[in-house]
Image 1: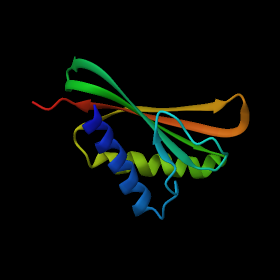
Image 2: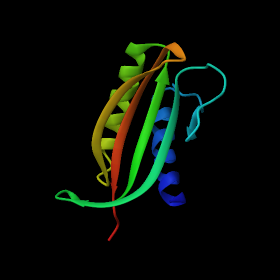
Image 3: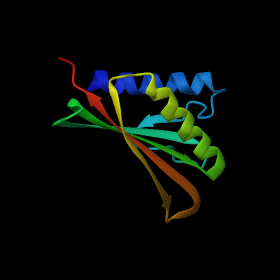
Image 4: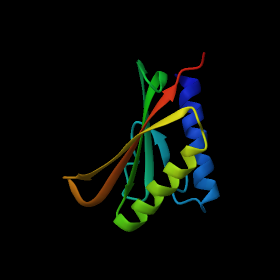
Length: 119
């Protein structure tokens, strides 16, 4: 799982660097920053072996982007999704929008991927 986490983190950091650092280092596994500095990125990896007609998958990956500006969040989500398209081992499972009921000004979008199992 550590190797998969390192790959996901490196891919997000590559996107961040290629796009003038919109996250400014605010990329972390599982938990986000305590302070309200936007945007930031949180990723989560769960081991969930499964088989579909697309292939065998080892992990489910969720990448959550959080921002106070909805339009810029949409741009970041589209850009990160395009960035991940270049990696054939990631199978796009869609994007989900949500809001933080404790912080109404906080917009959240989550990209979900399955990672092809290495044979």
